[in-house]
Length: 373
Image 1: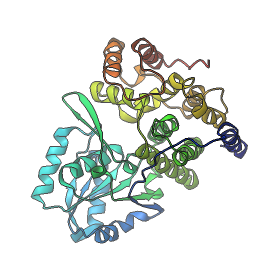
Image 2 (image 1 turned 90 degrees about the vertical axis):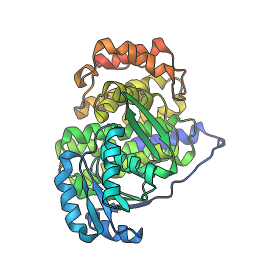
Image 3 (image 1 turned 30 degrees about the vertical axis):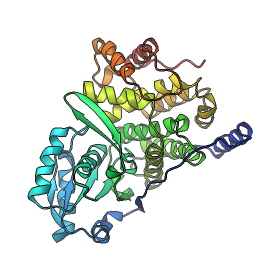
Image 4 (image 1 turned 45 degrees about the vertical axis):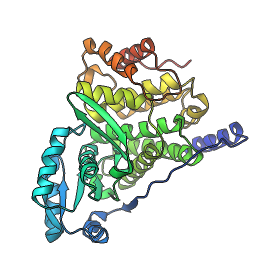
């Protein structure tokens, strides 16, 4: 991202906002440790929390990393549980809770992406155990008091301080081997948090600026990661951007984009990050006119006429998936998805209307480039 583009954003804000709107801002009580090699601080942070028997969580794919961390923690570790899954199935949580009780764990350490973080949050909701999260992707959920869980084919979300992790250890070293494709989709997922924060009903000046910074850092970092996956500066930018985007999501409400993704993921079992990547430009395009003042700075930053167009072109440049068809959605399910989205919509700057939502889903299904109005 070029500095002149960033200057445009701030000039735009000065021109458009002569008077400050009223707002409410609730900060999050969370300890953030960012750097390289911060994984080594896990034991020290457990001691600071007064914990002696942590259960280390991961997905099956990251079980080796969980075992290695357990070995490093030694007596501070009660064991590992490597069955975290997408969309936080309640059945997996119940299985993990049995292990927590059997091993008398007094904390959870979540090593991985959004799936593992979600499992740690689900355990904390039911036990009040403290959490340390060590992200290995750009999901950003570690910075939020939000939990989404899936049961009987339906995903529900809640916001409560009980699930906010006490400590997050961001270690750039852990992201160097994150595959490019996953880096891109995970990063676009984080960008979605920032985009919706720009027009959220609870938006405030601090989060609005942080959202722009998140998009700047992520888009700049992801573009370099595609050509140089082990570029430490690019990885640092992307991880920093993910924290900023997650902080945005944790401070304000969600809107249409997240509602669509929760339905598509929870009901149709579409892959989480890929779904966010596909839906992002279309949800932004849906709101471009209704939230023009909030989204115009993003469009300027991306060098596009609208935010929807800019995000679509960024996604294509990064090589992200751009069609729902390509990530497993069936055309025959689009009507049902539209019905579920409008049945209980989240607040959104533009009314959530069934016909318009069905058209949005069709565009996303085939990967149509948004048309600037």
